[in-house]
Amino acid sequence: MSIFSFVKEAGEKLIDLLTPGNANASEQLKEHIAKVGLGNPNVQASVDGDKVTVTGEVASQEEKEKILLAVGNIAGVGSVDDQITVTGPVAVAAVFVTVKKGDTLSAIAKVQYGDANKYNKIFEANKPLLSHPDKIYPGQVLRIPE
Image 1 (tube, rainbow, N blue to C red):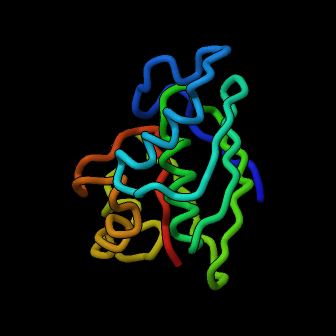
Image 2: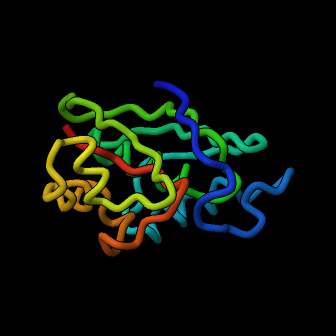
């Protein structure tokens, strides 16, 4: 359980999500999680300024990390407070990397694994959040599995 930082200016724009007093913010976040292809996990989210707190239970570390990224990679979100419990087997947490201008999955794979050809490992680890290996943007945070 920890707080993850994100680039506030990067990410998908969800209208009114971070508007003060938005009573539907939690429901909008759950809809966003489902829309990016992560199903309907047993999580709840609350918004306080640019910080989103996510609570609930999921079956795996990978599912937890993808939910955190789905929520954090929204324009206006500066941090995500992870209060999610993993009910399944404990796994090693992935490393999170923020995409910089000019980055490609190959370049990130070269830095992280020493082999640019392992870009597909990063792409697969970030599905369904990524739809194509060439569609990443500066400020986006990606999972880098062990």
